[in-house]
Amino acid sequence: MHIPEEKTARGQSIARLISNLIHPYVVLIPVLALAAFQEVGEPLEIFKWTALSYVPALLFPTIHMKVLGMIASRRGDPEKVSRTFVRERPLQLFIMAVFFGMPPALILYFLDGPKDMLIIILGITLVMVVLSLVNLAHRASFHLAMITAMLAALWFMFGPVSLVTLPLLPVLSLSRYKLGMHTPPQLVSGFFIGLAVSAGVFIGLGLGA
Image 1 (cartoon, helix red, strand yellow):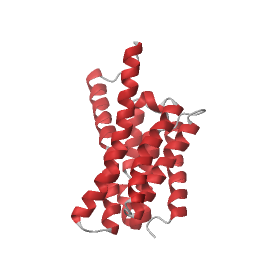
Image 2 (cartoon, one colour):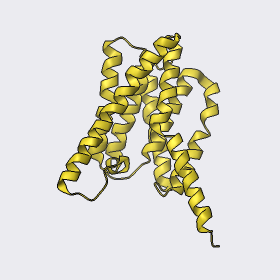
Image 3 (cartoon, rainbow, N blue to C red):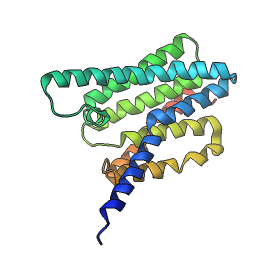
Image 4 (cartoon, helix red, strand yellow):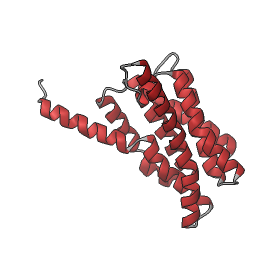
């Protein structure tokens, strides 16, 4: 059965939009804000701790990618330095995990920030580290693993009410598959890595307790 090119292009555009909307860095904002809300409650404090944990988690990996891009440009490397470029290289993914997790974790720890926010950052960071090791032999979905870890954090903090976020997982999976970014086994492995690793950290450190 022939599918018109216009319909295929529209489907790709919708899948790309969904993938961008359910991006780890997008979902991380409300997850961290909700964790801050649980512990501090006051709007200014919520904003302060969300910013202090989110901004370095975004800034340092971005700087690292910019440096990689500059190096690649000077070498005349034709391959674009992107998130996909990084994720397909386990060593770079490990470095990104360190840049993502260490600065906000240190800020939250030494400034006596909300405990649950620190635990969430540590859980997500460990998911990235495990993904970097798994990707030595098998490519697992980075997107799905990260989002699964974040939604697991909501479950530990808020219980059954957080189940309203579960549809995000199949929707994201379908979008990544539609874009040709992952096969079903890669999506399944990403889901289970994100769930198992983050749940282990959250249980061990007492998230939501």
